[in-house]
Image (cartoon, rainbow, N blue to C red; front, side, top):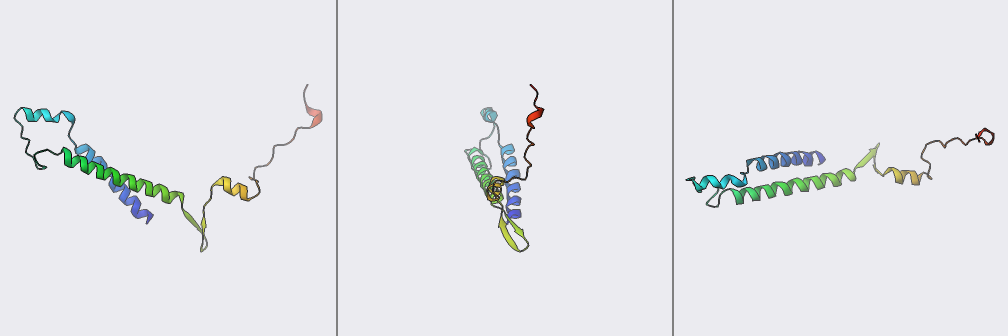
Length: 116
């Protein structure tokens, strides 16, 4: 399932890039003022409405797959043998082991070796 969502996420990202690159700039309407035709494949209003809706749909799809991947990666399950074990943060593991982190304590300075 995670692989399928990753594939959909990559497709949504590439599609979003392509849709944004296909959009015309804000100054493109000046060409129509000098004899250009405003009647296009997308209708009399031009491609602005269609491309805006397509961009919005691509952005929503990209965001949904991003949120899904973030949720699934934070709730991963690890299996030890045949038993699924939920991963816990390091802080939680340290607290369950009695606070021992496995790092040796710093050696104490001897009383007679201090410089004055």
